Length: 310
Ligand SMILES: Nc1ncnc2c1ncn2[C@@H]1O[C@H](COP(=O)(O)OP(=O)(O)OP(=O)(O)O)[C@@H](O)[C@H]1O
Image (cartoon, rainbow, N blue to C red):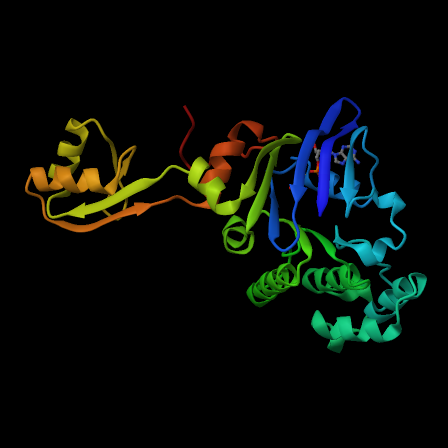
């Protein structure tokens, strides 16, 4: 269990993390989500004692990180892939960290196989691809067989097979009863991996709880409908006071109502329906709606080449 309470971190004038409180439970995968610069990495660094909070506290399994008697055996973290000493081989690097922490060399070989680096274990870390370094970082985090795992963007640089592998690994850790906190910008991936989410923006908590509840509350449900004469049905729906959009594929998207009501209106005007379903919205949509006001770095709207902005 990780308990974050009133956590605050300033860099100069800037509050990177601002009175943040949340709990990460064991036995589930918790997605840590937020736009660029929201404070996710800073929070994770404070959880493992790499940054000092200006206020507030973090407890891992009931204690501050600094008071853990065997930190590597309690918390494993993959925070960024640039830490390893580039001239050492993956195996030498892991053995070095293992020996400092009283962990057997046998565990290193076991982990190299688990993360799929058995073949390249003798290669210098500096020559490994980003994806391979992520796998090495994963092995580092797992060295002490910890009950609490933190992964900052673990899917970075991984190919589709690697992403699937991470997803299965995270699930396995949660099933084993470990506490798993994982940050990622891959929201479609998080939608299928994270049982719970902690969403932050501009250093502050926006939402926390089961992913499905977050999506249900924050994303807008849309009724999607197709009919023989879509234009006719659209007119009738608008006349009944509903907001209707025509999607590029010709279906109508109706907001602020239920499929039942849309079906009634269609029946009332004699329209034959080909499709009628409720689209409950996605994690991406829920994320966009809730973090809209907390986006620090926003890209300009894309203007197609040759079109001048007025
Ligand atoms: N060492 C530092 N010195 C000054 N400012 C920092 C430092 N580390 C982070 N920040 C600032 O704190 C804010 C939070 O950064 P952080 O890296 O924690 O965000 P993040 O949510 O992990 O972002 P991303 O998704 O882009 O990785 C940002 O505005 C960042 O510029």
